[in-house]
Length: 251
Length: 376
Figure (cartoon, each protein chain N blue to C red):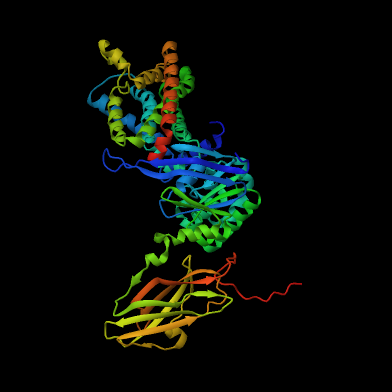
């Protein structure tokens, strides 16, 4: 990967440059997108359903940072190889770079959202959570998981096109199974062990600890998350290597 | 294995399995048991009709694809131009794309920066550098791509029919550049449908047919072999158009072999039938070489200022001396046109041929100009 750092850098640069270049508001969308999502959730659950929670908007934002990272990256990963067909079929590059730089370019967007969150947090609470520094190693652990997942999705999509529609529905369902607009304490005690099967929920809970509750996340959970992410990215790597030649021919 | 070989394919096979039904798959053998050795610093061309496996072969050498069977050894750094400007981002400017594409072609940022001026100069797109690529024409796109790509310093260069898009001037420039690169000791693998280019530049040529390597050898011999195959010979794909109010019934070659020793005229007799009540028409013929370049196109009106008076059944005979024609096979098209030379009564492309005998020499162009040289 290091050998290809220049290519990764250029790919990310061009991706970020084009992302908002043709829109009127440009980079402002980075601020608006998460805020709009938060505003909708807030209106529905706080005003319509009368769900009460202190600093509810901040709570929502702390969850959506990770959720948006997850859902944007996986959705973009599906057609990743299809979109970059020419790069795969007509030049010799390390193809693993594609999912890698996809995750990285979305990670950079997350940093922007993080900065916005800290800004709002400061306005609301007149302080900055000290634990928020843990955000950086934590999001990198999550990126590892995401890299594995994206590689798997992008590889399998080439063979099974149904994956796109299937994944979008799945992700929609997953949103409700993550503690984004409700705290996880709301989940009935006898169901919590099933609830925790969802890795995204676990990661979001850790993120809320760091950003919202100013807690240091449980070390065992964090180490488990790290191991889980490492194993997952390894699986992604193996899936890709095993299927690479077949995948290239099917493009 | 011989050390002089930089590319060696041994019993290489590769099949594709495109999906044709929901669960049905078809098998296409793109390459079947190909054995091939390419020497260092060779200009090696691969020819064959569409779908014969040329690009697959190049992709294998570029290690973009892996063979199902067999072994491929490649010694040296490969740069592949299977397409130019691959990965260009249309939303970015020319300059930004130089850096992006350079990175894709494996150039370091330092190398690109050092060569930036040279790249821009070579592309002749200085005034378009800050314009978005999406507003470029196809030719400009390819020019920029080539200009960046040549700065990769490969030991083996793979070129797949990418120069066809540019204009004549730039194409020449690219070919010059490729020849210079070859002088530096680079091996070149070349795919083109332009048989003129292939014969002029190649050291050796390989002919592929439906994935099978038919023959490898001297450019002239292989190109001739390719063109002599039924489906590639233009005279078997004769194009005939026109109202047939006048119909060409027979083309009789009275003499269709010319050699510079005997200086015998090429002579053809055309038999026609008048189906309509046409009284006058223009008769003409044209001579094209094997690569379908038109060399000459005489007709009765342009040459004599006269129309042909038509009978119900008649004959027209013409003869000429193909002096200075380069040795080779030439095709003859014949046609009857209306008085304004606009509408064909009967037009037959590549209807017959004649041969100029002699030893083939790589004279550039269509004819050998008689030059008086004076060299001090």
